[in-house]
Length: 194
Image 1 (cartoon, rainbow, N blue to C red):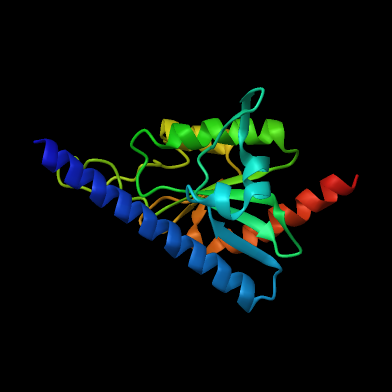
Image 2: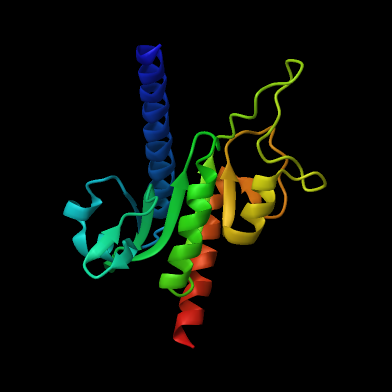
């Protein structure tokens, strides 16, 4: 039983890492193709060593000298200022209790960093099937799930790969993510210039 659980956790971890890399490569490819000076960095545990200044800006101060690393899957930076985080892209293959972590850190980062952007990217594997029918984790605009309602309130956008997901509001297809990030960041610059 223990080995089965460990094997399942390992599969989920590998699947999650693949999804992060897929999203990062998609975004970086789009930014290069469209001559944007943005870059997406993998926010793995090594971020503290590889980008200490960037890590420190995203780390959550708990008490004097004690910081906690948030849910940093991908970080968007400007190539001209790679030590300043512009956005975090939280990547999850399913919601199963993980979305609340993204929501929590989104609220904290937005308190710490004015006009900060947090988006969520998922393939939307769906909920447990009822009667053998696939069901989105996000519901519809007319019948939203709790997660959809929370996303509409606390996240800048949710970007989904699954073509069967009901889109609308902040729930969009993954192909819209790079354009939206550029729009968010342009608006962010305008707000910061005021």
